[in-house]
Length: 527
Ligand SMILES: NC(=O)C1=CN([C@@H]2O[C@H](COP(=O)(O)OP(=O)(O)OC[C@H]3O[C@@H](n4cnc5c(N)ncnc54)[C@H](O)[C@@H]3O)[C@@H](O)[C@H]2O)C=CC1
Ligand SMILES: O=C(O)C(=O)COP(=O)(O)O
Image: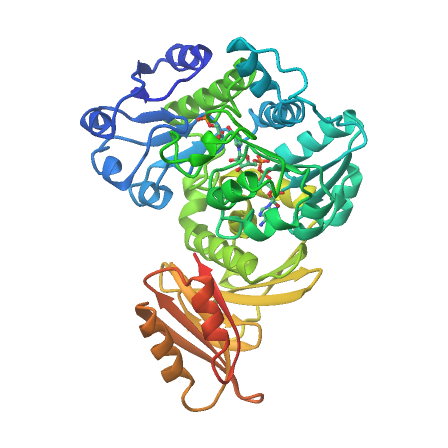
């Protein structure tokens, strides 16, 4: 069997694949058409962030069984297209966290002491001692946005520098943060109190442009920003204005909305109080060896023994179990994903009730799939079918599973309650026929919906004219409605309207919908 390595991989990974008996070709720097021309000859593909695994490339990958990402981010892989073609996508989420946290700390030091600017000045023949006055870190406040794996390592290193550490992470329980000596605060408070702010969240619907004009306006004029997470979390145009006007003192980026990045596509590169690296977060020999070893072993194990590890699109269960529970795994993951998008506040407890025919099955892979779905909107590719229960445990989330013969109206039924510090929601799902997952209850509303793609969920009074007004508003925004389900609650005369749309609902449109008569709330979802 043959494996193509299309991005730079540490030699130790190449050796592991060869020793396992695989034929390996290392061809880095190929353009999309060049990879497309050769991909048909390979069972395995190993990449980092440069190779784009698009639906178009996958069309030509007739023998491909697995894509292995030596690192975490899978923004460059079309995962639904890979799943549709039966190609397993796996990553190595643990190997480069320390190294990336160390880059964030290096950036903070370089910013506070003007190291890049002073180097450039001296190399141009100057001795500008007065110009480069810096700031001491000791006693200052280090604010972390996203206190997950990398954020908590960065906070730990900052504590070693005698800094006070605070964080914004609405999905992390307070006790977990307190255990590592980090105070959880709101986003605005973090902006206002921090001297240095370091970003460690994935790019999601929620985090896109999280660092915006308002955020920079709330920062101290002496405040400095560091982003070694993902391009797009920081609004680069807003950051440019904040740096140029002196609203904030400095910024360091390792990741950009458009990569590779040049002065043409990123004017920040022209500013003196801005420093940068070309996506070097994971680029140390130690981290590259870690991820190369992990991904080479995972890809070889899958191609030669069929063992799946750290896959983001396939559960780690035997074919026999998968044949029985496969459709419920899809249902569980769908309910989990929807729960997180509906939840307000940090998740504290998950109560799963397996009813009817489901009560007799091996339910643990379904619970794992539910948890993976639950974390996906906030952790993206950092969660998989293996680590989802571990993440739940580390976040102190209580999981309660039960079985019952009793169901509402269905032969099989999965009911899940998610309790957060701000309330709770119940979703009930079932599988029709052999493989047709449906949402059949949302809290007290009965309905029959297939949550998939961009959606709009509307809560309204059951009176004439609401659907017409809603349709007109969406029509004005040129949003096409592809599916519609109405769920009723007879006693209270309340409805929910579940619309499938052909594009994501923007926040402006959502505000206009919320302002319509007889609509009490509306929420945009994407599954
Ligand atoms: N520059 C580089 O070369 C590298 C960048 N990365 C990136 O670093 C980022 C962090 O990675 P990990 O720490 O491993 O991820 P993680 O999944 O362990 O942690 C992410 C944290 O962000 C939090 N979060 C999610 N949505 C949030 C929101 N709206 N507001 C505040 N917090 C939110 C989550 O609760 C979680 O605690 C990822 O984007 C990853 O792709 C990772 C490795 C190398
Ligand atoms: O692992 C990640 O998510 C990274 O961002 C590292 O990217 P790279 O492997 O250096 O192209």
